[in-house]
Length: 457
Image (cartoon, rainbow, N blue to C red; front, side, top):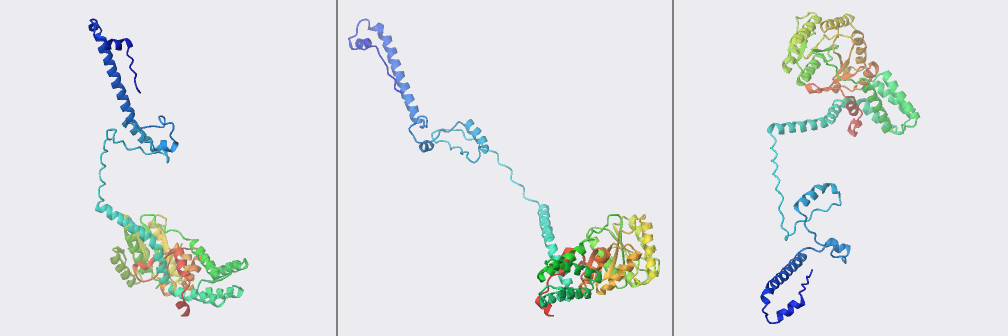
């Protein structure tokens, strides 16, 4: 703002007049006035220059419109204010305005450069291998159910070509769902060795669904059959109980059912899982059975406890249990002599074996008693189950040779009538062909509609 310097009029007049003798006495006053005038001028120039450098603001320019005020440049805040504003920026929300870069005319001290974070160390070979193994295990776990279904479909090809194909042809020839069709379905189920009682239960369910108007086409019949099969097979599904050390699995069955081969495959399975397995050659009546078990023992690296030909089977199994207890084995799998289920003395011998096991294990008995059944025998396998259950507490079934029969439906009759779970199914000669039974996968594979080539056969 301008500064007006007022000098006394008398002083100016005296300056115009010639110097008087008393001028020397007034000289200091003149000097002081000039100094004050020069200082005021310098102060005015300094304030004017500073006002030019400062940016205009909304307060100094009241005539500007709101849009023009926002467009005006802003003065850069001091470093301390800028740091505080940066700390409050995350909490300001979506409408926060980023800090304005410093002006070229306003010097500022640059913020200190943060120390660089140390680079992450590259993964070691062990970590890479572990990650790859985990990814592979996850992929295998996802692919396992579908792979099991495909293997079961291949193994059940003969069964699907049997009663499943006959059902499909029946639906194709009689698209109307009526009582006559239900009777024809009954004939197919009974001839498939499902069993009379199980067939009657399934047919009663179909008739009820038909009366309720829920069976309108062949697809609904397929759905109803699948649901009933799943209910039958899953009612008794329980995990294999091998919690003791040593645990014991007793294998029983008739001649030719595949007991010794099943023992070898089970030994390979549990050895692969990290269990120490000991085999007991309880079939002392056939030298070939002992030799076959020894071959499997060498193949899967499991020792075999055997006795002399014709020795007491109970004594051999007792010796095997004692050795397993002394040498900390995890599992004992004991073979027994194949016997006809109609021979009462042989069934009494099995009861003696069971009593010996209870004595050796402290009155708790075998952890699992598995009955090996040949799937090709059809309804005869159901009769075998009756006789063996009278002698022993059968805990599960191993169904062998399922890939070589068209009577795979007999599995429904066995489980439905006896309420005993299927533990394993045999689908071939290889070790991996003895597969743990899964009801959902089995039903999915069994009730897959046959293709046109199968129907034409």
